[in-house]
Image (cartoon, rainbow, N blue to C red):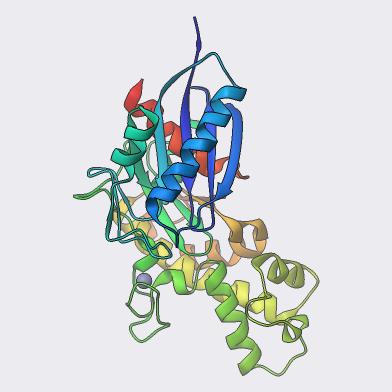
Length: 318
Ligand SMILES: [Zn+2]
């Protein structure tokens, strides 16, 4: 009997990763290419097909059950990407249909944060949990909610967009057009904005005074904080306070067993976890206090989103 596998695709604004994944979550092979979201969508499908053919040829003898794709603004129900920012592919991109036709395989799609939640549910810290929330803290902030072992979808598959809940009515402008959204504070982009605000407001010396906004990375802020830089440490405290406050709201709505954080900003570890946990506990209604675990994902690494997309495909096509 042929070994069964699915194709997991992590379609991001910068790069796209294509992986072959077994049912137990083993990544058999993976390839990456530039998404070039400003080119035509048809050119993306051409390049995806070429990469798929190459990876299948190099790993022959597999029985491919289907394709799962995690991408920004993906609608599980329609199979379309809805008006994705950072892409010039139109308002409704027929992702599932066009890729399915080209690869002659069934395709299911979901937004990238939901894919991360599925990945935790099948292969990560969520394996033994029934109710939990996953937040991806990267360029933006995405979230996926698992209730009673099922991904919460809502009416159009995008339930739980915590990145755009309001922190401050007159707060920072967000790419989505609203002001004061959580992702403008609690994400890699958000903490960079905080660093520059603190540099403007406070007089102390900081290594980060010598970097431009575009040069500064989340990792540089983490390293500076660990080396005792007060601005960097202050930025983590500020970020954690805001994130923890909104997590307390989420706990009141969902009463989850755990909240799992993943994405670039979580490389900071306790620098982020400690102030977030303290702020969350401080603002929790007493009945929830001390009961919700706040953890950093262990699935991690570059396979994370591929595994989530693959988990969805296994769920749909097995
Ligand atoms: Zn927003």
